[in-house]
Length: 108
Length: 118
Image (cartoon, rainbow over all chains, first blue to last red; front, side, top):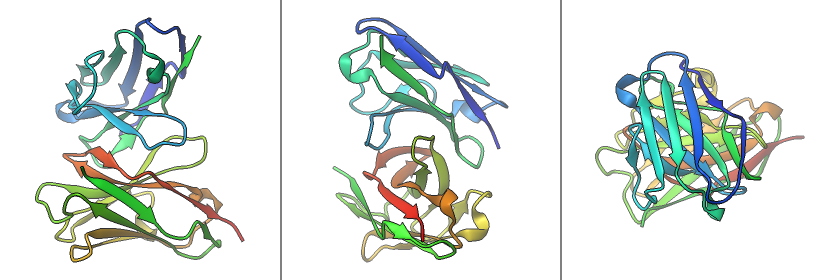
């Protein structure tokens, strides 16, 4: 199975700053079939990005995704208070679908 | 607006079978092009895909759990279900049902905590 490794584990930033989250795959992800999710405590994950760079419905344009092959990035251009959460990447190009271990974005 | 809701026992004894149902509202499980999946998250840990089912009954399971999983779908009730047999404490987790479109999950249930303990 494809192993996804996210870095860093924790990102400490202030509101208004730019956040850059990385997701690296153990082998190439077919057709950039990579998604990003946001999870707040006690809540289900919410889809942010699919197909590496397509924003899901209702997602603000401060969220952007990029990458291909084995290296993918989620960028939050200016952090809002509601963006402090845990973020997961997921690949769905090869079964089984797998998730990264998560990156926590916390308030500095 | 599509909504999914998990239901089932919150406590299961070791070696028994965990059974959960996901009820879908605001849309049909029989809609072409969508799979219906289960994901779990042990307390304080990350997400694990369990498997998915199509309305025609085709199933795809995570190989790490395949020998213990059974999924089914009931289009008349607009529900799909998960059974996980021979559970241990390692199966304690929040279990989510979700709609799976092209592999990613666009709608999620709120999740239900299942604890395996005697």
